Length: 316
Image (cartoon, rainbow, N blue to C red; front, side, top):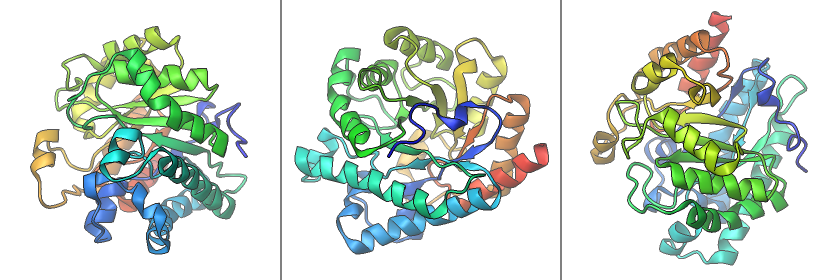
């Protein structure tokens, strides 16, 4: 059920692993779906929605398999936690069912697309309790651990290989998730989002935030990522280095170089330039060989991830 839980293949450092792109922006702007509260998980309730999700993941898996790259299958559950679920009319039992169904769908896709040359770990995706762009409800580490523990337990019992917390914008929530995952004996990845200056929305430096999460969780995260920010927003931080920054092994950037505030106010999709996006990301791979996991976030789709794949091949 969870063949990679005891050893995540993306940690070997010998193979590039892809992930998907901006799930919600793709569904809204390319698929025409209405996603209240930016939540994709309700689509799991109906055949048409499940078909749309399968169609979304398909080209990414095909790109990975065709190029003998790994692919991390992230569930569409970024909003499937208690507070967001309650706003959308989902109780605890219904959310548990959704989270289990998300893992089952990723396992189904793995069975269809995985090859010996393209390992495909299944990741239970976790989002912030509050707004992904603004740390509008700050929790203690202990409160965050209690809040996120249930979703992590469901992912474990459903057979996930790991859990990934996306768009973390302050250290305490990330540390609470890391602790809850460690308590459940689940590998965990923490993806942090930064502003245009490369710092978290709280003003904390990225390296300091990683150090704080590690200190509070006993170095529980398997690795860290940066997501939901354009490469130009964090490239200088990666170049500056430092022990904590060296813990970053993956990138899921935004297509747009706009700030979070600008993106929040936007009414049209800014999908940037996929070729430039791929080249910028591959250049970071060239400069920092520890980076092995690549995908996209807001505004990106399979074109952007395909461009990363092409550009990274040129780097080698």
